[in-house]
Amino acid sequence: MSRYELVAGLETHVELATKTKIFCGCSTEFGGEPNTHCCPVCIGLPGTLPVLNRKVVEYAVRAGLVTHCEIAGVSKMDRKNYVYPDLPKAYQISQYDMPLCKNGYIDLSNGRRIRILRIHIEEDAGKLVHSRGNTYVDYNRGGVPLIEIVTEPDFRSPEEAREYLERLQFLMRYIGVSDCRMEEGSMRCDVNISVRPAGSEALGTRAEIKNMNSLSFITKAIAYEYDRQCDLLDSGEEVVQETRRYIESDGTTEGMRGKEDAQDYRYFPEPDLVTIRISKEDVEKIRASLPEDPDARAKRWQESFGISEADSAQLLRYRRVADYFDEAAKGLKNAKAAASCILGQMFRRMETEADKEKFETRVSAENLHALLQLLDEGKVRMNLVKSTLEKMLDSGKPASDFLSAQDLEGVSPEELDRLCTQAVEQNPKAVADYLAGKEKAVKSLVGFVMKSTRGRADAQKAEALLIDKIKAQA
Ligand code: ADP
Ligand code: ZN
Ligand code: MG
Image (cartoon, rainbow, N blue to C red; front, side, top):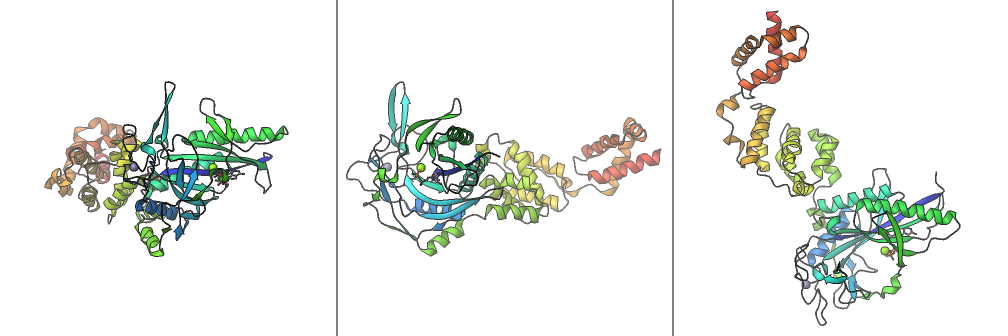
């Protein structure tokens, strides 16, 4: 046991996936030629006036609800003043003392609860681009809506921070408010870390590492800071409250500047915007529009469909996949077959995570359902389902285009009997092997029968019948 306990809190910025910016009609799309998604409002020309985008409030409320927050009936925007070239107005419009959401939480798999202090809305700043000794500024990102999700200092290990962030990322994607792409900066984190003697209740002095955008860097930075601060205390020195930078090349951190206080920002109420009022009915409307709670959904799949925990986690990972699965599996006896088609054959055609997230497939959920309905009714077997699904995936056509009346009839007992007799007669070696104790040899005979029926026969019945016939011959 270490003498010091790690204490960390996270401030996470998530860019909202609204079509337009928070205070003007410019596009929020990532990338694009520098300074092309801009207008007088979002480059902060004097005399322009911001108008709050209603969708931003709605998305932030969704985020608040899915993290169990209370939604404030009344909140307001404030100016946070600072001078830096990424912020042409010299102030950021944010929320100070009346955030939209507060007192939520996210539970971790080890049973610990991470409390969320607040979620507020604000505008993103522009981006500085350093190139060949020059610095350029791109305001495309300026005015893109953000939510900032602030936790209590509840993390006790780097792994807890990682799990929380993965969960947050999943939830935001699931409710459709953000793509949370850390590599594109649509999810970024400020990490606050301190240590204290084990058993102590008081908080130690913290360091803050700003603007982290990789899960592995975040966990490494927390681990490094923990060691650094423990070493300082052990050698009788003190931790200084400051803003530090993570250095990717060697996994260390270095001091950048003293940490600013709220009073450094001279917050005051934004005079150009009105108070935000959200009625209880509005909140309930938004709550009703949220997708089924993800944990409840996974549990429903496990209990009523018999899907494994691992498979339900896979299906739930991407919202489109989850919705597609529910649509395809609805009313099927064998819903597991739908899961296996999606996770097997359909996912195999999607190489990247992004492909799976988009889940573009030529087979509609309705057509997959119709195919699996035939399986439920015993008209086709799984191997025929698979080969038919491949053709459907290639062509986008329904199963009925590929299954003949003969396919759907199945194999009559007489025909099966005849084919098994034929299999035994034409494969003396396999028969001899079987009789010599190689039980697996019968599989090649089953294969013969399946091939001659194009997969229509019941493999289990065929196997039993073949064994009878071999034994009768011996
Ligand atoms: P600021 O916005 O100035 O960084 P806040 O007091 O709002 O400061 O805290 C920001 C984050 O820092 C929160 O997530 C909070 O839980 C965390 N935090 C505050 N004090 C400590 C501490 N002593 N050790 C670790 N984390 C802390
Ligand atoms: Zn604009
Ligand atoms: Mg901070």
